[in-house]
Image (cartoon, rainbow, N blue to C red; front, side, top):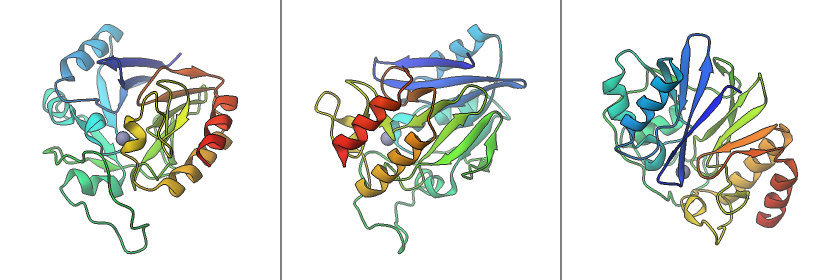
Length: 221
Ligand SMILES: [Zn+2]
């Protein structure tokens, strides 16, 4: 297993993914989580060499500035689209659905060192376009074991659900979704990858998630 989950306050995840050159941190959870994340990395005996962000919401980039300060030289990667939010630009492009942006998009001091491009790679992770929850959201597929780090495209807290439709047992992620039709199309595309396990931003890691993803998509469609 290449994956290590860091859970904050019972509801928010970050993941440390082991690579030959150190650890890739996927998302940074909420503010004031840097210490917990750094101690999880040191328990694994490897340095965090890069931070890859699924999207720009506050519960995913909350500890980015603190971690970037604590890890000089760390690579910081996000899509160009969601990087605009981090820089304080909350405009939508003319060709995008003009749905209302929801959830917190904080401005941060840290500047990305590079851009995530769907189809590209971050170590063993393939970058997968997953827009809908935010305009520039991505997922990561570990090509070694087909773990899908889906960010907020799916949540598994209170059962596997897309974030296109509010799950009454854990409504938070769906309440922050930007464009529902785009998010449903993404949920279908991620399901088609046939992941071996689903590692979301919120909730437990789910093994063999195909059937549950199908049911979640049917519920949201
Ligand atoms: Zn989110």
